[in-house]
Amino acid sequence: MSSEERTVGKPVKSAERTLQLLETMSAAGGPMPVTELHRLTGFPRSSLHQLLHTMGASGWVEFSSDGSMVAVGTQALVVGTSYLDRDAALPLAAATLERVRSESGYTTHYARRERGDVLYLSTRETSESHRTASRVGRMLPANATALGKALLAELSEVEREEEIGTGTLPALTAHTLTDPTALGRDLEAARAAGFAVEREENTLGVSCVAAVVPYRIPATDAISCSIPIDRADGAEIARVAEIIRRNAAELAAQLRTAGVR
Image (cartoon, rainbow, N blue to C red; front, side, top):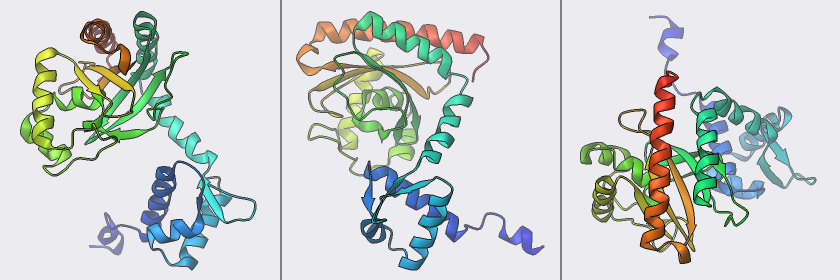
């Protein structure tokens, strides 16, 4: 076996550290002190500064004027957008979101499950948007969102445990279901109803309704609407759920016809 073959699959420390820096800065949600980045990562100071300045030179990182603060740079947006550009489902999904927003009157989201999380890929906001955390590119725990619940309900219990585990689940508010057993009961109800609901489990003051886009088995994508909690009574939930389910089914048919898998 050659030395090149022996190194295949072996992690590269500098690459691992670079990715960890990007993920840590992304999670911060804005500029953060370099000293805090050092504390969170535990990287040697010299290595940390070398990596940051290398990343800064190519636009992956931006520094404050005095160099004490650091944030994700514009190159991350350029590369991240390429994911959206290559996804054949999104142009059709975007048109569907426009219809759902128009019919429902609420902000509408399209997301994809990534193991135990959901990744928001497209959003259409209304003028009354609560500006929730679910913007494009944001990853949230599946158990805390209607989108995630709709998608987790597609899985068997064994499959679900492989994705989210059996321990305490992450919480976004005091209302988030963090007990896997309680979540399982909620998912059974979602499976029976054909749509999932969450009430202030993601964002206080907001309820969400979601249904899967059934063009894959199990479904990977879903559509949701965000409803102010004071409007989210049973009748309104049912009205919005019918709109989402109908449009999601139509989108799935369009995607299958277009050969999107």
